[in-house]
Figure 1 (cartoon, rainbow, N blue to C red):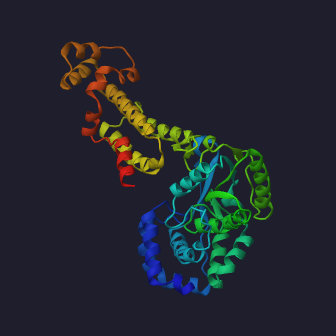
Figure 2: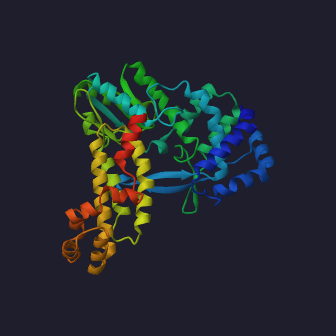
Figure 3: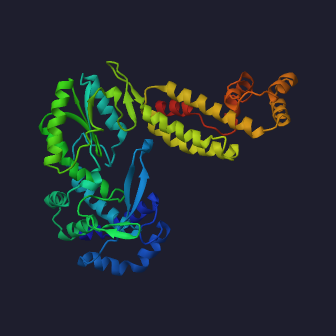
Length: 420
């Protein structure tokens, strides 16, 4: 297997993937742009160290990412670009070995599977009458992975001791915090190319236990939802599975975030559901708050952006956002967002015109009658109120923003739904 890892084809694929993913530098400060030249120059020594088992990974650089809603931080470990390259090469060799063994109800970080498939399966369970969900949240999952248990699982399918030794070294490479290297006796750094596969290997044991017990469930990474028919059954399942996770897997269930509840009152991968007998997928309230916060940032009157900059940033952000939430069965949300975005842009443009004479001049150029242009150009009404006024609503309507390059979420929603 070590020779498969070091094959030209595997290494070429790995370096292309690392370059495509880009990302920040590790503790050595080397950028992704410098990786290829570094590998070409030092490959002989690097290969010899890997083959002889003397290669020593660098510590990961600890980065704190604020969680949505400002509730704490998520700890990421950023390996050096060389270590990302080697980890990617390892992952490409191990993925075919382990992925075929994983549960059909596991969707995270797996080829040809995505979050939308997990949400559709959850919707199917609700339609069949399983209208209570045991929503389990694993507390600091990546920080609590037991190294010995993980290595034992790996050894069941991987016979090459050099590969196993290299993986253990990555698990124990340490974390650099404020210039000081701390040992890592447990956990798998969240941020490296190998971490997703290792997390699925750890949690596959949970999947197999749930399947053995006959539970209906969906898991995406460390988000696990189990569907049952009654609250009483949910409470019983929650207690027994929590005991299994904490006693057998040596992980911790966050009791504050875990719950037995109705699916339409919970969030799963950014989505939720309606309470209909034939449920519809909708965008979760938390996801709507997040997108509106980002739109407010881009369309803030306080930021001295040109309108071209605002539209360019909106298009860039909303293209990805709309592409993910296309799964929602509630097109009215996209329609309302379009209206709200256009109103915020009208507000920005009204402030950008500043002086009454400029406003009058602009209104006249947009075909507003002279008396109305003078009336509205001299109004004392606030920016947000003016942005919804009939005069701006007509002159700065849908066609105006379309001609200025603003893409419509509703148009994209209809297009993607038609071709999907």
